[in-house]
Image (cartoon, rainbow, N blue to C red; front, side, top):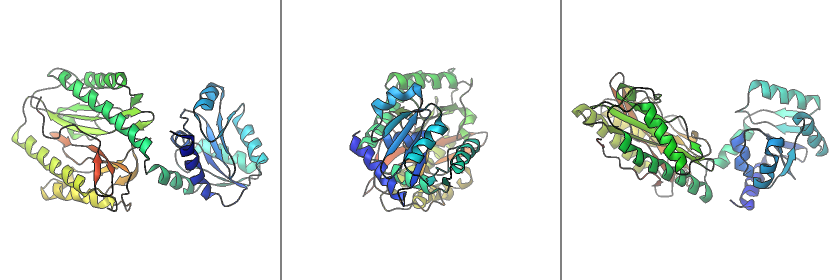
Length: 363
């Protein structure tokens, strides 16, 4: 990614600053990485009208200087004192906090420090919304990374299907998937992989255990990989040995809803309309109360980010948004079915990043 791109992102944020004595204070590590290209577990960023400063400790200074763009990297000794030094040198009187993703204790500590030095603190959601609005539209470089993450996921999925046999445990399958993803280029998994079987498939976010694969059960894969900071997210439900008529019926309803929602996705459409398209099909089939989550969500540097494809969402889809389409039906103590694709919104529809088949596979 070019230096110019990171500078453009930072400059877009500077429009929040109404005067030269104001500064943006960024603590969310994903946001810092998005703005300057350097991802780490510690560090903070200050954005003034003229300059941008990235504060890291000794452990990260070498990497930060190599990987960060459009900012001055400062190795701090005492973060509070070093922050105040830069703020005073730049005659800062007002500071905008990120309102989310910071603990109360850390927020209060910083706020106390700044106010003792006569710096006004704005902790409204202004900064959060501005960064979210930048991140919600993916550029070409981001799209390529998400596509690569999906390719890694699919390669691992296709390989692990041969390992899914009667008697193998959910944990073993999850471990094999993670190993395959990392061997194929993933830096991490997108989340704790969901590989669940039997009655546990009625749990949308079930946790893999020592439960073993049995004939006549559904098996749900909700999986994803991370590539250069960007996530993928895919769900497939397969049958082991055979599928009963009821299992096939539920699967066909979910698939119909998922495909209808895909057809609805395009620039200019409300997220709530996409959700309604899938939800109406499931409700009309008599299973509305068994579909209790949103139809989808945004994906990027975080596995769940804006926009939310939900009944109450007022957000309008725009070209370049990456969202999931994942309706499901969950019959308690019986089984569940979810089918999930990840797509990029276009002017006239969407580009599906998932190439895995969606007809019911019986292993």
